[in-house]
Image (cartoon, rainbow, N blue to C red; front, top):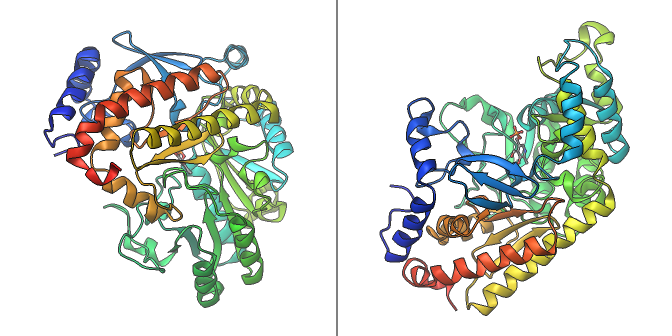
Length: 462
Ligand SMILES: Cc1ncc(COP(=O)(O)O)c(C=O)c1O
């Protein structure tokens, strides 16, 4: 049984309209199930009753295979900061395409994108490219272990950093623990041995980190944290929290590793710049590839210097057939050079306006909900109580029953594309008009769900 099986009248109506609008998607999905498990190649893009099949993107808009148009607030999970088919990016990528995609050699576009990124993020002195954020966090963690000669990485309870084994730990927070959660394997297939090398603490809790480090720092290589955990619910860091982690890392002699794969978009130099907290290493991905597969990890030159092949047998090995491929590099440079602080400030303001509008909506409709986030990244939380840790966010999500999924379908039915956890991400082709459209769709969708809410989650009504 999936979340959309409770059988309430309102729910059936929402699903019925979705099915009517997307009949061709349904047929495509049935065909896909013959070739891809569950019809999908990416767990995160699946949703019930079946995913929408998109066939084109234009700026802030997506078009599905039934011809429906959607304002895209997902932007491939925050990676398309300039929306779809931005002409300058298309031109530079196409120009490179005619001259070859990848040469199995060093190439100038790699140096250009590395230079652009290092100019933006002062804590990064040297970097390496990968093909995904997953590889970037994996290599960043390996570099930290090699540099310190220690095995343990401390991550946040509920933090997501990709899908390699050493981060498939406590991606969903421990709902039972009080102050000191216990690390748990996230899914089958991840070896138990991983738990010897990962520990977890609650997000936004310096005291818990201090306690853990005071006991275990001699075995800890580094602290891994997404400065604002996005899959965890876009829960912002408490004022001074990230700087506090820096101080603890220094005091206990461990490295501070930021996963800015999503948050890099929030300021020219990432959330580390906005929060004035300097990590030893940073992982990046998403926006830095201009819409093509990408990842990068970098940091202090003494740590990254371990990868210098010229240092002989002791150097760390890191390769990848398509690392630094010319298309990604050209598109990434085109995207990053179009993203100055003024452009970032503008989309951050639009995001804040959306967040304030959602908070206002909940109040006007007599519903207990709120929007959390930072600038161009916002997420609905189904509670009006404090959301400080990732356990708070997970509890609010779980308590909302199928409402998250239903609101997602209500928005799709009104031409708004988002994630089914209620995340909204702003791209540079958007302006006030797009914020007005999504707020109007949210108001209509929430009003349509009110009777269902009364049945499924009455505590959400005031
Ligand atoms: C914070 C964070 N880290 C790592 C990753 C993994 O990146 P990728 O999907 O490129 O492997 C993601 C992907 O969503 C992410 O949000």
